[in-house]
Every structure is written in structure tokens, then in C-alpha cells.
Amino acid sequence: MSVSYSKFREMMLRLPGVEEGTAYGTPIFKIKSRMLARQTEDADIIVIKIDPALRSTLIEATDAFFVTPHYIAHPLMLIDLKKVGREDLAYLAEQAWRMIAPKKLIAEFDR
Image 1 (tube, rainbow, N blue to C red):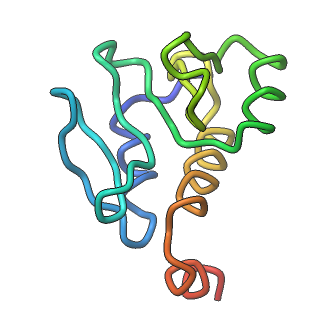
Image 2: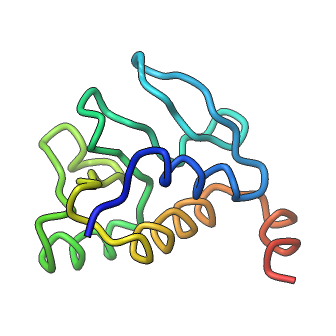
Image 3: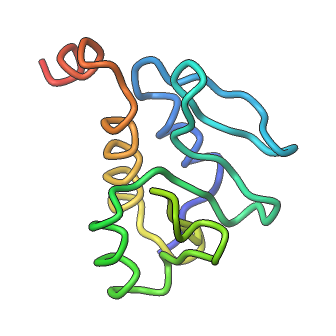
């Protein structure tokens, strides 16, 4: 199991309305000004928006998912791209997108 950053980038940019930019000197994916995910200073680690209840379940299941003290109070999770499968990452990317995307974009995507 391993996903390259370039594959993750492709996943994110396939989602409607997602734009790529820069934050903290690293690539970020957002809809308007709202962050979905970003690469950390460690190129193999990304931060992604996530429902806190799902985050707890995932962190207990595998060491591919984790948080540092900085992210505990936020609906965000870190993912080690070297330890995650492509299908799991695609699912999490879509879930992050659904948390941020306008209802109109979601309706169009679900058609």
C-alpha cells in the first residue's frame, strides 16, 4: 500500500470546484478559500478535512492515519501516503470534499 503525492493530487483535482494553491509553502487543495487538504513539509504526509467521529475510528484502525497535538481540536487528520491504499484515500478525499463543497456541486456530482 502506497500512494504517490502526484496520484493524490490527481484525485483532488478531479473533484468539482477544487482549486490548487499554496499555504505554508506547500500545496493546498481548496474550494474558494476553504481547505480540503494540503501537503505538509514532509512530502509523504498530507492533512485532510475529516469528520471527527470518523477520524477516531480510522486512527484506531491503522497507523496510516494520525494527529499531532496541533490538529486535535480541528476536524483534520494526517495521512501517511506510504501506508494508505488508493481506494481508502480516494474515499477520504471525496468525504473531505463533501464537507466543504456547495450543495449544488454535490448534487451535480451525484447525478
